Length: 149
Ligand code: ZN
Image 1 (tube, rainbow, N blue to C red):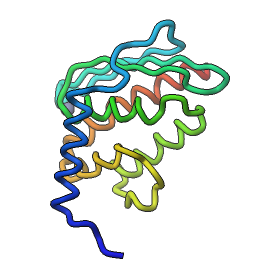
Image 2 (cartoon, protein in one colour):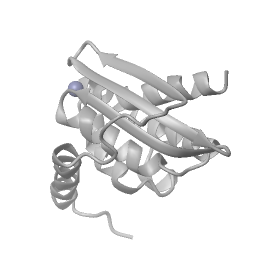
Image 3 (cartoon, rainbow, N blue to C red):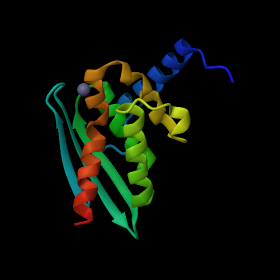
Image 4 (spheres, rainbow, N blue to C red):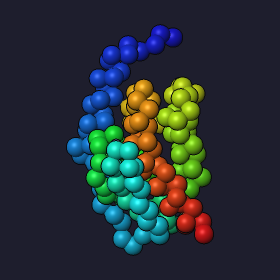
């Protein structure tokens, strides 16, 4: 097994990130919603609102709105795309794996398939930006706790 060329990876990741930033998926809050959560990252000024609707233990709909840097907004878009339609257990698992990738610095290869989210791996090199990438996820986690009452 040979490691992919780092520069090519970065270029690809940058393209994925910018694509989500410019064309956000699941943009806009869902109505009706079972939970709505606001997240704020004072270090960067990022603001995000996450809303979700559940049906039979699955995320039937998820949407976000916000203002912030490209990393926070791209992360929200990627997150919404990945969690849409998943069961709550799968969503919680993905939150833990994403945290493992960004905060704990674990190898993407050992965390399982994460789709476009792997494009955020490079953010780990910039400690201040990890909070940007994690912002929608911490809001999602808080929203899920409310749903479970
Ligand atoms: Zn930011």
